[in-house]
Image (cartoon, rainbow over all chains, first blue to last red; front, side):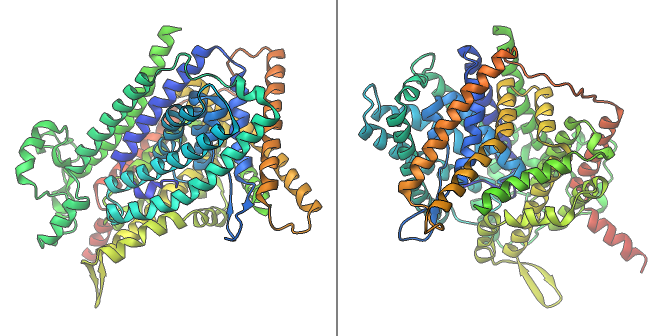
Amino acid sequence: MHMADALISPAVGGALWAASAGLIGYCSKKLRQDQDDRKIPLMGVIGAFIFAAQMINFTIPATGSSGHLGGGMILAILLGPHAAFLAMASVLTVQALFFADGGLLALGCNIFNLGFFPCFICYPLIYKLFVRGKASSGAIITGALVSAILGLQMGAFSVVLETFFSGISELPFAVFVALMLPIHLAIGLVEGITTAAVILFVWKSRPEIMMASPEPGRGYSIGKVLAGFAAAAVIVGGALSWFASSHPDGLEWAMFRTAGVEKFAAPEKGIHSSLSAIQEKTAFLPDYGFKTTESHPGEETAGAWPAVNPGTSVSGLVGGLLTLCLAVFIGFVIKRRKAART
Amino acid sequence: MATIENNLFDIRTMDTLASGNTGLHRLDPRAKLITTLIFIVMVVSLGKYEISMMIPFVIYPVAMVVGADLPVFYLLKKILIVSPFAVLIGIFNPLLDTQPLLEIGRVSLSGGWVSFFSILIRFALTVGAALVLICLTGFNGVCMALEKLKVPLPFVIQLLFLYRYLFVLIEEASRMIRARSLRSFDSGRMRFKVFVPLLGQLLLRTLDRAQRIHLAMLCRGFDGHIRVAKPMTFGQKEVIFILSWSCFFILARRYNLPVIFGSIIEGFF
């Protein structure tokens, strides 16, 4: 389920970094507004609990394999969406650093895939649908089961999307979807059952914990989340289209191949002459190449090696840095606004 | 059972490595974090057929491992353990992309194989860089760097707490598992009926623990901030570190250094 650095392009990684950084900033702000510092140790310790829980496996009958608790959904149910998102993000950060699950650039993707969907889509829209006001064991079981399965399906689908738009893997979109979704249906089922069972256990033995869990209705509007989601989609879409139009991935590369051109060092030389006119006007770095006059002054001696297109490399670099700056900038702006408010 | 304690052992090993005292260890965590991020972005931004351009990037993790006296085989083993996902996704490339791309003597290599190897190399490089970062800096160091780099404070505190209680809770979990297996005859298998109350108990204990921690923190004057005694200085050394590595990465990203090197060698003959 973890996305790996090796499979993503800087544009996709950067865009999702920006989206995740924005969400982390937003959740941090929400937590500060809560003024409930009881939650700070609670989140941290429950995050550590997720680790411990993932290391306890049970045997799935008749299959010989074993299952364990996933995390996102149970955090959302116990802590509420904002704290749960931060806790999930921290769990994934530790996994990325110590167990090399995923990677640092893919961390944004992983936080988004495994944190955003359970906390901001499944918990408020699906779990709350089942467990609204009346908390019965049936409602908790179906709510946890359905939302855990759907959350994992969304996450798996977005892994496919990210891999596809990165264009590093040759796997066709449909095949990858057909591969990922059934596998994660099974995983989601196991996760849903464990989540439901553990939540039910807590609810039966200590109902006050479930009651004390924050009501998402307070200071929490779907509209804001949707606005955030739309903003993320615009960022992702913008970065992706910018990337897709200037790099040979998927379809474009197939066209390139069928055209019979065999010049592998410079596949960026696009075949989309008709599109390039529009692109030139809209894109900041048209076709990943600076106009020669804009190139860095002191470093223009690359003409000797025809295989290297300095413009392409420079714009790749600038693109990567730009997305990084974007992520940092968004975090910074949110931080500033937060400071101004308090 | 074994995996729980192995994981714990792994984290402790890396923490021990991070407490070394070489010049690289003493460098400000921010410098190492930024350099690692630049490195990863540079590696990942290379096209999928550009194996030769990826090679010079190996110098960075190698230099860090050498400079800081890190155990090479331990790190390689860790990279190997997590490689299956990248291999699984990458292995489809040779099957789907059969256009011959390279011809070495009479053997022709398809584009799929080239991109498969490029996935493996970029995987090893990016994972290696992240591991090197944590072995050089330690998790607390990375968190402090994040705080100084204006990452929202609640998230940084969350990371610090998580890391602090990771050990406590994993040990608690492994005690529970040991107790169960000592009391059951089919100790290899954990039934779901046992698993749920076990996990539920652990969760309840966790919640109680969180409450105790909170009370203890309040007694000691917690006001939402965590203060660190160890000062961080971002001086000349750090600037030089970041700038010189960045220059190298840019050089390796822009020019195909192995090809240049090869043509220089060829020039002699």
